[in-house]
Length: 139
Image 1 (cartoon, one colour):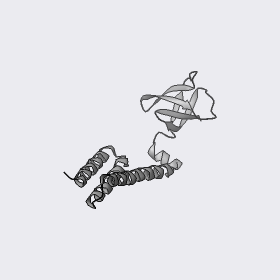
Image 2 (cartoon, rainbow, N blue to C red):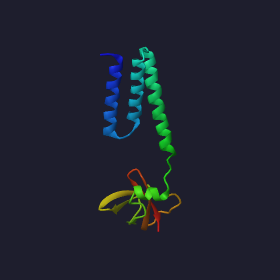
Image 3 (tube, rainbow, N blue to C red):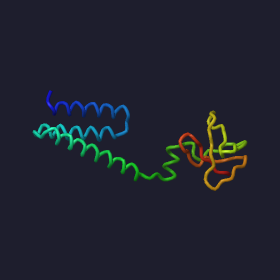
């Protein structure tokens, strides 16, 4: 099997894996494999093929990462993505580490205080989600 064929097979495998994961980074690496396959078809040696794959795939992944970082979400977009934002929960007690266990949507959640808030029992609004923790602000 020739070099170009191996690069095409690798590109197909990377695209198939990207379809499973949905991250788009594997798609960028697949584009790098396509660039290497085209270099192989043009008759370039293995070193040139590897450099073209690394350059195109790496540059694509870096540019995709920077593009995703620049995508800023407005408060309304965040609300649309996390339907829990703005909901209210009852906090019965805070522990010594500044966390509380609250019931929300029928499940127990760990809650933390938003910056500048004091830990007192009462009704709180979900301001944000930090991983699997609810960030609360006093109402």
